[in-house]
Amino acid sequence: MFKILKILAMLCALLVAVGAGGFYWLASSPIPLASERAEFHVTYGKGMSAVAREIAASGVPVDPWMLILLGKVYGVESSIKAGSYEISRGVTPLELLRKLTSGDVTQGEIVFIEGWNFRQIRARLEAHPDLRHDTRGLPEAEIMRMIGAPASSAEGMFFPDTYLFSKQTSDVDVLARAYRAMQQQLSREWAARAAGLPYADPYQALIMASIVEKETGRQEDRSYVASVFVNRLRLGMRLQTDPTVIYGVGEDFDGNLRKRDLLADTPYNTYTRAGLPPTPIAMPGLASLRAAVNPAPGRALYFVARGDGSSQFSETLEQHNQAVNRYQRRGQRTRDGGDK
Image (cartoon, rainbow, N blue to C red; front, side, top):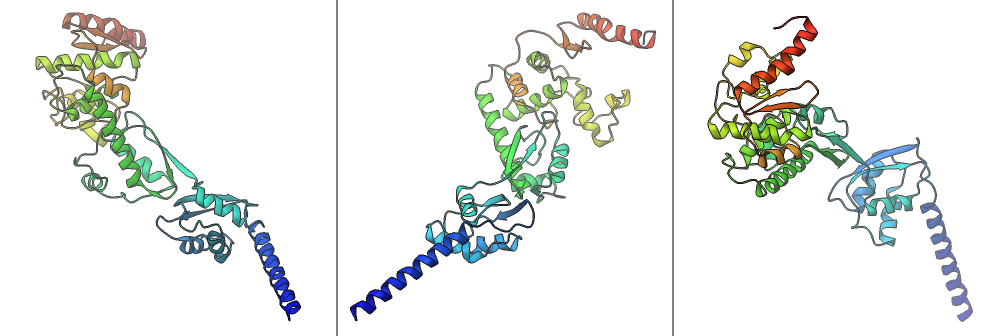
């Protein structure tokens, strides 16, 4: 009897060993992908069983029970990371499980450029194939509510940067991150601002930074451009900056700023209205934020483009007119053979 039990025990052990070996062989065998690569998405908050079925339903030819059993064997059923994944031909179920538990997700990328307005941001978001477009067709105020922002205007409220995200992330999440980034940068720069600035709050500094961003792309000139506008605000002079007028014209602007545009009164026409416009006119970068809150010292009230990307700054109207004659009207004579 003892010998029979011993033989049965040995047979059971052999069967277990064979089963374990077979299971390990299956877990270590390549998944028969139909193409070189396959992609799938794991939804946040789902357990191992649901994730295994989700992967199989996406077209990856792996038996859900294999992943479920592997998760139990290795004790990682609750360690699956949500996100988008990509696997290549030759991957095994065991390697797939390791990828799922390590969070080795594929990422999309989107870039917001300094000087863009919110209309341009939305166009870039809507054209991105790896995002879920939850804000499409919604008004600005509703989008701001969705990202948890107290403001109703979205203009200038997002920080220009490169944002990585798991594929099929909502565009709301990307905007929320860009909004928080701008709030953090603005708060940091506001805390380090120069004394005596003519801004009532950080939002006004953001408005000024957006004007500086649109007025010059030259790093060395930003603080001097900010100084001109700060000096004008202190004296009660109108800012008279073309980018705000162009913003007020909106989508009707055809690239040619006309005299009638300068005379048409809008909330953004700084030729007809004193002070800052009601909102930012674009998305300022960090350099423009810093220039707005720490303008260069000096009493300049005017500047004119030199034609090489830099600007000439002047303290008096007489000096400014001389600079205009030197850098602009001379250029027109050169191009057109006469003065204008």
